[in-house]
Length: 331
Image (cartoon, rainbow, N blue to C red):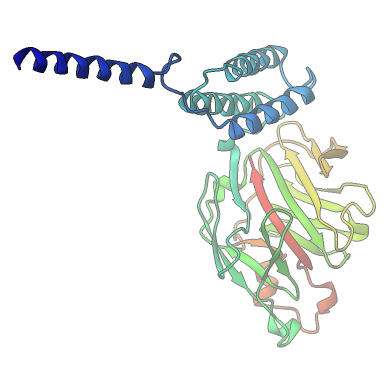
C-alpha cells in the first residue's frame, strides 16, 4: 500500500508539472500596448511648428535644439515595447519642448508682460475679473439715459471669435475702477483685441484710459484703427492708414503698439504689419491731475457719461457698436 501511495503521489506530481508546462508561454507575460493617440498628436504639432520655423523667426540654435528633441522623441515613440508610462513621459517632454521653443521666438511676449486680459469666456454674469499680471474687476454698465433714452442695454453675451464675446450698443460698456495706475503707463504698450463692429463711424471706442489725456484705442472713419497717446512730449495720434481694416460684421484681429523709448507707433491687422509711424517722441505717459477714475472698455469717457452734453447726438456718441473679444494689454 505504501508503495502504491508513493507511486500515486509521484504520478500526481508529474501530471502537475506537465499541466504547468503546457500553460506556460514561451514569450513571457503579454505587455499591454500603449495608447499613442495624444503622443502622435503632439508630434504632429511639433512637426508643423518646426516646418514653419525659420532663422527669421527663431534663433538657429533654438531650431536645432528643438529639432534634436523632436527626433529623440520620435525614435523613442517607435520602440516596439513602448509602455504607457514612457509614452506619457514622452508626451510631457515634447509639450514642454514646444512651449520652450515658442518662447524663444524673436517676437515672443513674456507672459509676465501681460498687464491684463479679458477673454469673455465666462458666458454669463455682469461682473468679470481680469487675468494676467493684474486681477481687476470689470463691471457692466449702461450708456447715459440722457443721450439714449430708455434704450440703454447692458453689454450682452454673444458667440465670439474665441469662445464667448461681448456685444455693445447705445453706450453699453465696462468700467474698471480698481486698476493699478502705474501698471497702465509702461514706456512700451501693446493692445491686442478681436473686433467685430456693427457700425463704421469716427468714435467707435475700444479702450479709453483718461480719454485722450493718457491713451485711447478706437476704430475711426473708414474702419481704420486709431491710437492716441499723451506723453511728456505732447499728444501723438495716428491711424493704420488701411481703409476698411475693420469691416462691419466681420471679426478682425487688431494690434496697436507704442514705444515711448523709440517713438514708434505700429499697427497690425490680422497679424500683418500695415503701418509704422516714427514721430511719437519719447518719455513717459502723462496722468492728468484729475484722472477720470475708471478704465473704460467700449466707451470714451466717464465724464461725458455722468454729465452728457445737452442735446448731444446719440449717433456720434463715443462708444463701441459691435462685439469685442480677447482684449489683451501688454507692457
